[in-house]
Amino acid sequence: MTPSDVSTALSDQGYLPDEGISTSVFLAMTLQRPLLLEGEAGVGKTELAKALSAATGGQLIRLQCYEGIDVAQAVYDWDYARQLLHLRATEATGESQAMTSDDLEAQLYGERFMVKRALLQAIEPVEGPPPVLLIDEIDRADDEFEAYLLEVLSDFQVTVPEIGVFRAERPPLVVLTSNRTRDVHDALKRRCLYHWVEHPDFEREVAIVRLRVPGVDEALARQVAGAVEALRDLNLYKPPGVAETIDWANALGRLGATQLDEQLVRNTLGAVLKYREDHQRLDQHGVGAIVKEAFEKGLLHG
Image (cartoon, rainbow, N blue to C red; front, side, top):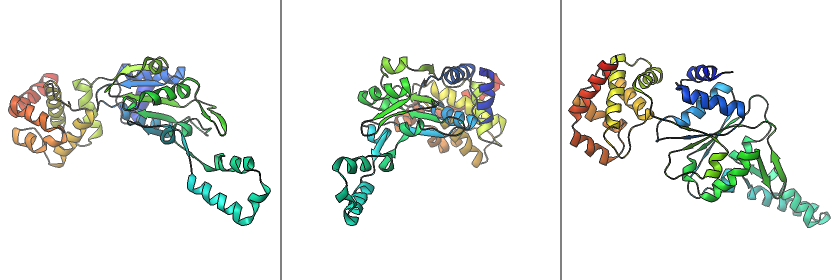
C-alpha cells in the first residue's frame, strides 16, 4: 500500500483527499498510530473517518466528545436495572442463600452486566478488518478525559477495576478531530500523528461539489465554489466549510438554478451562512460583489 493507494480508496468512497491527507492516513495505518486532525469546522475531518471506515471495511465507532464526558459515557457502564433484576431473581429462587457476598458481587460485576461504550467496543476482538475509532471534537472534552485517553491510545487497553484489563488483539484505526476551540495537551499530541486540514483549493472544491451533488451544472459548481471562497475572505464569525458548499450547491440544484444572481444568493444564503452576524457582514460587503467575484473566480480557474 502507498499514499496513492489510500487516495484512490478514499476517492472511491466520495472523499477527495489532497496529498498531505493521503500521506497522513497511510502513515497512521502502517505505523498503527492515532491520527489527530485539526482544522476549522466543516473542512471534512469527520468525513475522512467515515470514508476510511468504508474503504477498509472496518466498523465505524464514533465517540462524540462534549464538556463533562466521562468513563461511563465513553468506556463502560453497568446495567443497573438488569443487576437489580438478577439480584431479586436469586433471592426469589433461594440461590443467593448458597452464595457468599463475594460470589454474588462477582456475578453482578461481570461482563454479562457491562454496557460497553465506544472506547471498549473499539478494542474488542473482531473478525475481519479492525474498526475505525472516531474520537470527534476532542477539544470539547475536559483535561481529565484527555488524561484518561492516554492509556487507550498508548497501549490500546482499558482497565476495568472489577474485571481486569481489556487489550486489543489488533489496534483499531484511530482518528481524533479538533476544531481547536482550545489546545489539546502535548501528552496526547505526542501519541498521535498530526495533520492540519485546510479548506480545499478551488479546483478540489469544485470536484467535491460535482462528486457529492450529482447532476449539478459545472458552471454553477464553479460559481458556488468561487462564491464560498470569496465568503471565506470576509473574516466571518463562522466561515463556510465544505459541508456548507455542498449544501448550497444541492439547494441551488433543487431550485433548478444554472448560475448565481443576487436574488438567488439572498434567498439561499441560509444554506451557507448560519450566523446573523455573518449575514450582516455580507450585507456590508455587498451581495453583488460576491456574485461578481464568484463569476470571476469561476472564469479565472476555468
